[in-house]
Image 1 (tube, rainbow, N blue to C red):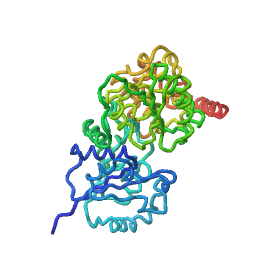
Image 2: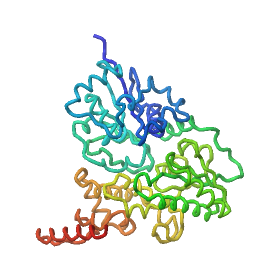
Image 3: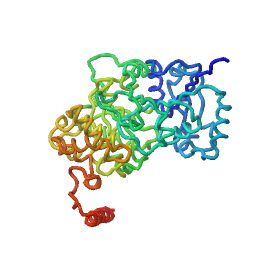
Length: 449
């Protein structure tokens, strides 16, 4: 009897994810396989109008890592990848259909998935139930807890969490409840893949590089209104000019309104600066190599940390404090990226940016590794106390420690009270009185709406 073939399937929805996978493959993070498939998913609201990642600029330079490229959108058409999961009763039929459609036969399949707790990764895991799973995280969300409970039959198949070492010394929380071992993708492998996508590198010269402003389109995530996000971008322009930068480059989110870019160009001109809009759909890391910016400014983009850690570029944040205060619900998965950026990246605006006091360095970038791990653990516990109950101890340690005052803005008083954590409102021990207190807190929250 001939040995079974091994087929590795790598699921990716963004160029950033594809670069992370390519870097992991180049560094030997995956064992040998008879066949490697890149499964492309296009999760845009209207996929028909948004090119998938295998049509993105530079993808051809990553293509040779894979034997074939398949489309998940075509596989489940006309259904949307973000909204479809197989019904339990249909699983046996769909599992056989998928193996036949992708010519898997009786291959031993290994999966590499992103965002396992949601579709399409969850659906793919269900349709290949015998495949061991490696989860790769392509951003700051790897440092946060799993956003919701995962079926143990799926979570128990996860052996590893591959992640970029964006904050050296900070331990990822994602999927640790299943014993997933966190492994960092080597930085050198990642930057080499980025180099393959980039044009000529900026040459060392007398002229300083521009300030690079990163847009995220937070209005599309309902984190800000359109007007608020436009003002956030204007703050980036004003703050960069106040620091003495006269050449600015704005990298908008691909789906952001063009009107924002025109407004920023006019605002820069009024301040005596020149702003260029980078409208190529390229990774921010490609621009780091091509432009060698003198400053990178953003809100809580992962690209701020790749600039700081991988490329040694000065970085600054804008708007994190306001977003932390209004982010709902508390377990929102954007909270940990906000927390990390707020803790390790200095503010752009000196003095009172986001309600801080003192200069930028005093209010960001000075928290130690141990303290940062405790802060992230405390926020992670407050987000998911049932999924990660063992994080209560570091949460109490941090909230009772010397940095509690500086980081209290990461928590709401109500959340601390409900979880009986330091900083909350002390509640009487009598059950009846505690019920009344909780009812009063709920009423207070309802009146604020």
